[in-house]
Length: 282
Length: 350
Image 1: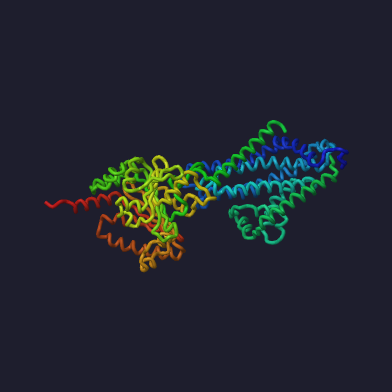
Image 2: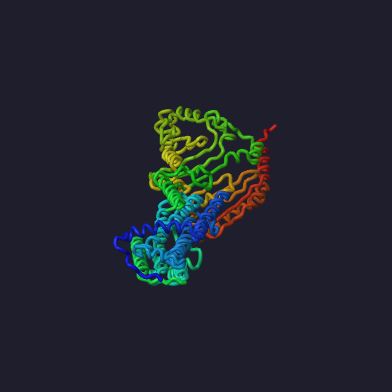
């Protein structure tokens, strides 16, 4: 059993403590079994992009989607929407965010961290930053490779698509930060965070976005999708329905709301870690 | 942080840095055309500015060596003084030296209501010194532009050099020639040649508004469909007709066509397809009716001429929605018949 404890006098502050936890956690996160999953998840789009590039090189007629010639920029936009925004970013958020504290509890190593003379919330903060750096350093290079493989096909121009790439990289980093923070809160407050996280990311969010009304404002995707510069693909009836009921907040509103989500959820998660009594199963 | 973690971070940051750096260079300075990725259509399109109203291509080498051309050569022994004269003056042998030609047209590019600007990009083997000397003899002067030699023929120069007839016949804008790269000659209006040089040097640069036609999706979608032809042309019909000084009676009767494309493959015979995209479904139906009427008339007329019957039978009207397509195939036998008929007509009387 670990009980909340006050840091000792002269103990390092929140940020320096978080820095130390970050240093320790980054390596653990990168070289864990979860990283294999992460590698497969992010290697998929790169392999797909390589296959598309080979196909575009072999067949002079280029790539066609539903019989229509598809430009490299359009395919890249579609990959950003379908692979990264709707799948990879929420999945990484769920798997890494919910496990920030839960893993330590499961491994019964939380005691070692909580008995250090540092604020408990620094543990969460350090781990959150480690998650953010780990995922950002994996996701963004993957997007970069996909961009340079896909965009030059079908007459696409690197120069013309570059501003949207920069926007995509920023949007994905913000998405990882937002989803990570939300699921960090879920992971610190609930007993079965993974199940609830998956339900939130792949049940609640897509479902609510389908209907008109205010409920969609209680999702991360609503604000994140406003930052995407590519056209939303209409690949299925669900996507078309989403397109119909799509309300797009302004970029500044979205950024502000996402910043509030990150700040608020991290603060709540920090409070939960500070106040919660973690019972380690024997 | 362990060593391998540090290496991972360095590699990731490096990938990001190189990618962003490359993108930034491409965005601000431009990217040499064709540096990353293969362009659909002939690679010369990378030097054609984006707002072209029409593009045409001919694989001169394939056409010159085609069975059809050899057959016509034998059947219709034409005077080839023009070809010989061109070779004497420029050293260019059309049969062997020119591989392919890409031409583009820009109606009223400067907004001055002039007939329009154009450019021809010819790929082959050229005697650059001889061509430059020839142009200088005719009053052209040499300029340096972004590291390339531009042989510029201003209308005033042409008049001074006694080539006033060229200047007087509508060439009010200056013409230039430049060897953009070894074996690639660009000839056309000076502004276009300068744009081609810029595109060759730096590629697309959206920041400065310089982009090649490869970024013009509407036109490139048509170009990509032309892969099977060794001669083709695509363009915006409305843009071309808007700037041609057609009599009102004709221009008012022109069908409402937005895009057109014509593609042909010349080898033993000629097969090809002419496509037009009408403004709407109704215009397409009207156009189809008109073409159908002409086809019926042509087939009726061909009934008495066996040499044309084969060709008429191959004519096929197609297309759905806004597209109207007319495909045809002229078999080699038709040219045999035409050759025989023409030779008969040319036979000297004894």
